[in-house]
Length: 126
Image (cartoon, rainbow, N blue to C red; front, side, top):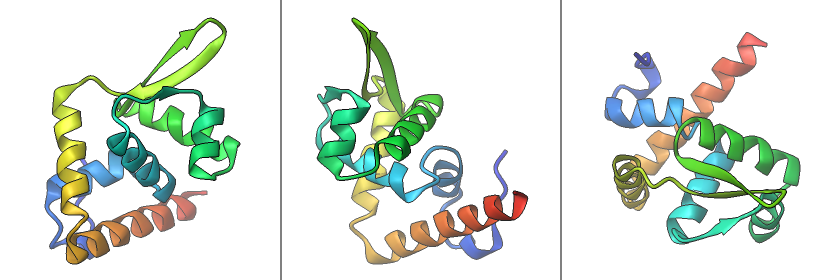
């Protein structure tokens, strides 16, 4: 069970859990948005980092986290790892709903606060 943080009391607990367990960084949020907008994309971390103009090491790290969270899947083709959006319909629907909810300023602000709070929490653990 995911703790319901005091700063997020008006964000639906489902979204708090989603943001704490699946999309807990802004880089992951960007990657989820990227794959949502390109649902048939199957590509390497190198190409994804280039398309998104992000650091390769950060993208590789975040892609692995999204695979662990079942948001993306990874497969080896030849000697190359490629990533794609999960085929799990429940998670795809959750992603679709999240992206749609992000069009609302208040939801987006609360989601940002949730991620920042989580980042600060993890920083304090170190």
